[in-house]
Length: 321
Image (cartoon, rainbow, N blue to C red):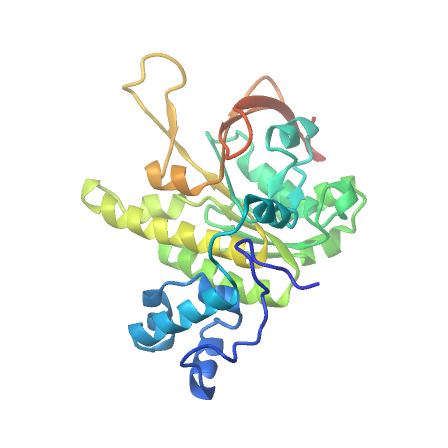
């Protein structure tokens, strides 16, 4: 069965019949990574023009043609519900946390976890990279993972420990995780683009960015650079969402927090990234440390789940209740 994109339509590789697409244009599109209808339909005219060298008018015609072929207009809510059936869920390893998130980390969505150092964001990233490999009946998707590491947090030893505790072959589990270290924000953005090549070839069901804001914070310092930083971060997040939609993968991103001295009552920490990250993330969860190995997860924002809290543990075996 071919995966149908979240906005409807067959993800057919056949681009013939699109207006203004001859053999040369077809070659340009495929060379630039636009090798299926959904990838073209989800692009903007400027984006397609810059990638292929086509004129903006020609790019616009091709995009309109792709959208018409995919029937990307209005449809009854009942049809949207049917398409929601394609959404997969990856277990976090904790039933309480899964319930809070509505069954686990969703595909076609960006799940953001923010919290202070040691709150469990990166540990959860490692756990998900292992859990996604499990069969569906055990909370996985029988797929692979991509891990973009911006803070040198990835530890293969943890993958080994977590895989062994779940009865998986540690060596095979590590081979199913594609890791790249991002050295700055430009490199991070490039790796998100390169991830598409892996998504086309491999059965990847999870893309992790740990952390999404770290390199942006270090590259753009001072108030004068804030607008540039936010625009670039916005484009990066939209790119991740597009990958989630086109390839039916789950996007898990971690985020740092900053202290707000103006807050007199309650928790003075706030996530980095401002409104741009707040609006783009489908699910937002705040993680904080409790006693010993316990962690508290608070669901701050979700399109379909109520706000609430869940307690889970971080032990040698991984994330547990």
